[in-house]
Length: 558
Image (cartoon, rainbow, N blue to C red; front, top):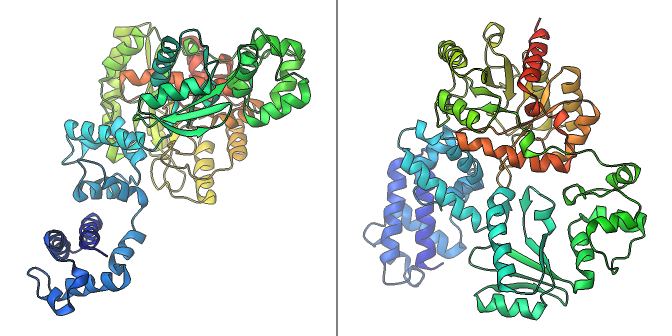
């Protein structure tokens, strides 16, 4: 243990004690010791114990902890704090602009335990509701987290889409005469992108010369594949294919492994054959085309051979915004601004669903404020007709599975979105109890973000998807596909199960600002993977159809 390591241990111990709200005097003494040790000209390991104890600012208690570290390489009390501190809280210490006091507020009051959750809270404008967090501080924290997460190397589809398009254009302009086609995870519209991949007729040596001369490092290299990583920390992979095999390679690399295995067995196609297009590959196999985003499992192969696949939902099919927040709770814009923003996008209606009263961290609505908001909605509807704002609430599902208001209050809403926001560390039994009871509540219209997951940040609580889908079918409850690119919850892999049970899906942006409406696109992209059609998506309903849905929901309350 050198002086630097010992000082770092004391510094970290001081910060953790502050975060946990423990003895502030001791925390300051450890911070002071860290400063003193870091400035010492002589290694502590070379000093006699009595000399260590005689150093100015090093008392008996700290002296013993220095000796402990020199002799064992460990600091026991620090290990105890590390064991009771979530890893994500430790990560926050590396984010510029967040000190121990702010981290304590984030953890204890907002119940946030990871950087991904904190980034999501920044995007929802929640930090500004707490003392010491102004808009500038929130923005700085947001930018620092995005930089940190970007250094980890995996990205949300939404994070990488613009870069992919720009880099694709650069490649085509740089390598004149060579063909490049985006493929892999990106072409399959996966929610998380680990590697951006292309098929190219440019040779491995040509690619290697270009990228290494531009300060990219080679990650992997074979005769037919090479990948690089540069300062952006994005892994770029390239499959080489001569022109005559280019289309076949594009097809192969835009399929999941399980799909490709099943296709190879069922189709009898020639991977080394010459094809003018991917459609020609399907025609040769006596199959209707299967788009890349649906090439995930074997089941769809038989469907495509039996007939044309249904037309999947498109971004333009979204007719209204369901699940949005205004500055009545933790949104950025006023209710009128949100409505006019929807009108400018030629949408027919807006379902405003601010947070309920238990979400105190999000300025949730009390009963009195609900009445005031409903009055404003009535005034705006008279002003903005035929556009319509619907009265809704994102009601917290409480620990016992009940909703956040009495039935008398809930009856004042057109629809109710029920979501879990607190006490997310649950086993499956607890999670299922809460969710099923909420679904069975006759006032619940939509189940919001089913598992509470945040992609690349927080696993959702464990649930039995089949039981939840069955319960939604039995109680006429819609399942939300939360389109925020960090949620995308319900997982698209379970949508076909819901469709089989005739359960509606609703692609909702969970928008906290007008630009959040655009997140519907990311929900549509993953919904396409499951084969969702506009007819089975609630937010594609026309205004008249949605009004009929509201009447149907209100009828089940009686």
